[in-house]
Length: 115
Length: 114
Image (tube, rainbow over the protein chains, first blue to last red):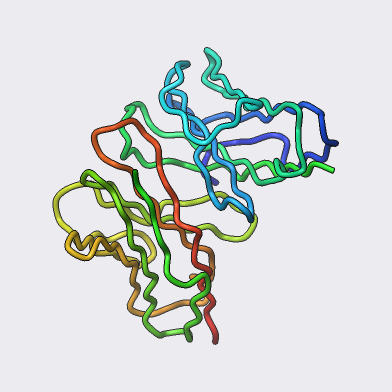
């Protein structure tokens, strides 16, 4: 158990819909990262937040957005969903430094299926 | 720009045999290099990382990797495979000096035969 929790574990929805994925980092961790894992694209970094502020942005679509709240939990919002958005979405957290080399601890993921 | 190539989407070894998973990278600046393991239905777990200093890096579960700048490689090895090593392994690179944007390889599935 990494200490990172993600809800829900599974999500099935229809094209055009909007969903919110939630992540609670390990106690004390200030950085949260979001990743997408799919058969087509492999593992892709989406976005990082550090202590409530966006720190780095990767291959995140404009239909996707994220935020980190004062209690440090984070949400990833996916809108106007398409079939190709079906994937496993991981959240990870790291310690109280904002270094690129911090060890990240991954949650178990949310499996999103868009029908 | 940075990229990672993992040679072989599947590697099959016998229990007790040497494990060698290959990773080659490209980066315009000195890289930070990582190996992660993913067990079925779980998130990724860091095995080891290279940032600076000693080029031979030891990680968890008996794995190690060597950073070879001249070959732009960071191959993962383990002297003796165990059944519990069967998993998906990912190599990743982050270019130093910039913000955190990692690039992952496509992964190598390690199969261990009894």
